[in-house]
Image (cartoon, rainbow, N blue to C red; front, side, top):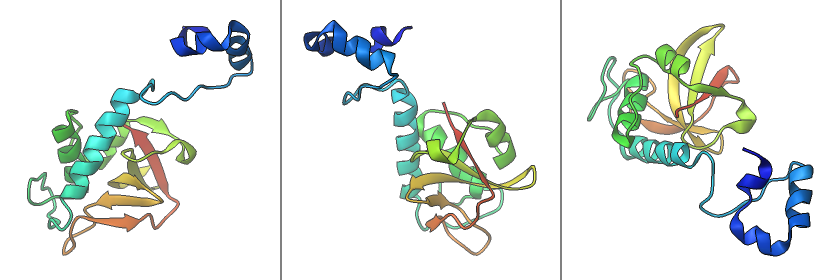
Length: 157
């Protein structure tokens, strides 16, 4: 698909020269409600809201909800309720996502905590450098600032 094929019809009124100029310089046109990743954004937004709705739920190793969760259990539960099945563990979930840079992250993306190549924790990015996650035994599902730079990001599609 060429850039011109993605130009919304109302741009035709602005003239072909304007559309060609935008396409030639690689610009993008922002149109409310028009996004190539709209379904992924909707899925991620739903999953994020579901995770947030579990605020205060107790952590339990191996739990996948609806009342108790471990870290990957919360992400699995949230995305399943939003309409997408994920594998069970944080490492398996990392392997099933589209890996993205920290600059490309957006609310609803998964945040994977790692030590070397070992993925040991996962949460759902909430924006502003924070995640919804089920931290550890004795804790509850909560919003928390990302505490390390040793993270990778993945987008569920």
